[in-house]
View 1 (cartoon, rainbow, N blue to C red):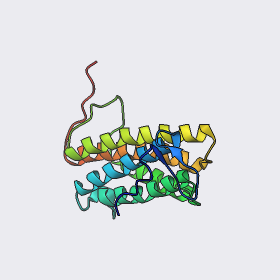
View 2 (cartoon, rainbow, N blue to C red; view 1 turned 90 degrees about the horizontal axis):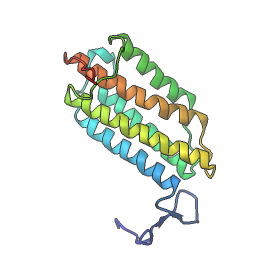
View 3 (cartoon, helix red, strand yellow; view 1 turned 60 degrees about the vertical axis):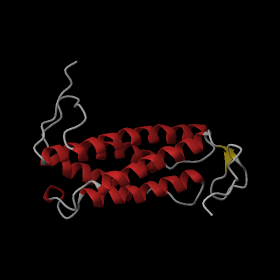
View 4 (cartoon, one colour; view 1 turned 90 degrees about the vertical axis):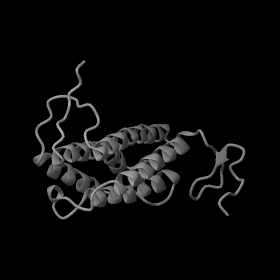
Length: 182
């Protein structure tokens, strides 16, 4: 059955928790924000090319899929499961960012989102990731759920990865990055 009626009064439960919590709590806000990022990354993944030489043996879709898998770990951690993002996931993201940065011009200004459709989607995913990060930080500060330091670092790096991928998409397809006119 696709519905249980258990949340009809505005409460829900998380993994291993018999106690109901409000659907507006910091935990459910964080879980929802992470779900938004993950779902939108599915849109990004379906709109990306199968592979690209600028990424070596991997592709936009491969990187996006791995991030989606990682976000499930973050959600599980916030929900109380015995799962955490490890240093290896942080290092994988940092390595991807470093690899991408090598092929891009140095950043000298902010850029107006857009260029390719993929870049615009990645920019939007970046904003969703930043919101999810803020929601997870709120859960961490609340102290009801212990969030691992690596998870917080991972979420901070995620927006940088999505930004780097957006810039790479524009670079690959010859779209100039446009600075705001202020």
